[in-house]
Length: 228
Image (cartoon, rainbow, N blue to C red; front, side):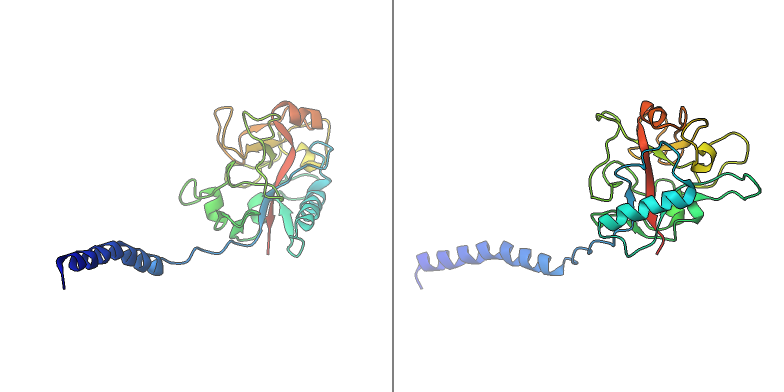
């Protein structure tokens, strides 16, 4: 075998080695996780009556209607809202009415594994509620601070741990039945603005009308979770 042929063979061997290693690495790599089921979204629009959502039942129905239009109607959907004790009825905690998780956005990306991670019960910031992952039911990014119009104020009526406020000062626009007087606790889905980055307890609204909600960077939007 002449020297030229030996050199050619050696060169081909060296050239093929990296390709072989690449093939082995690709074969050994675990397959990408499949997208999760659609179980979480921010409403693309509110009912249009400010914070008068028709109570929890009306809010849940709004979530269900939007989910159904996005091929998610086979699941039962609840709005992430708390109510305060009033008229002989006990308070309702938002965290207790959304199921157990995990929850995925409309693109199948994980938002939170369970209720504890969602609220940082054990470790803070274990959820992915932010502008990138907290999408609407159509899989679209929801406008945040710096966008026109800003829509980052999300109705919650909740404390940071997902529990209701004590009776007294209105934090739920009369348990989601007022579009005039009162105030509602809001979260920032984009984790930005006003020195408070909480997704569920950023600041109170200026009132309960649609105009009041828009004035601080909202639009009467809600978080919706599939409970099954």
